[in-house]
Image 1: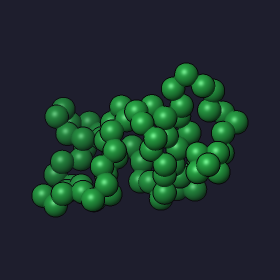
Image 2: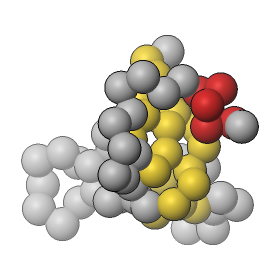
Image 3: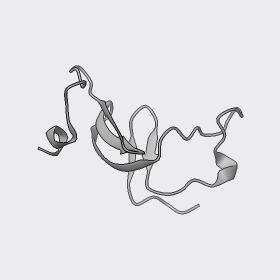
Length: 76
């Protein structure tokens, strides 16, 4: 398997490589679950990140409410 140039760990892993189909299955025990196909994102540390998934903005922050944070907030 090709190694990823960028790999980030949250509660899951985020990688910039396409995973082989035989490793991904939402129902089979022991397989990986593909939850998002990220267009762009910022990963500061575990549980503090944001990204765009199919046009939808998703933001998670540890210890702070993320409902009003924008992508630009993470950039600065």
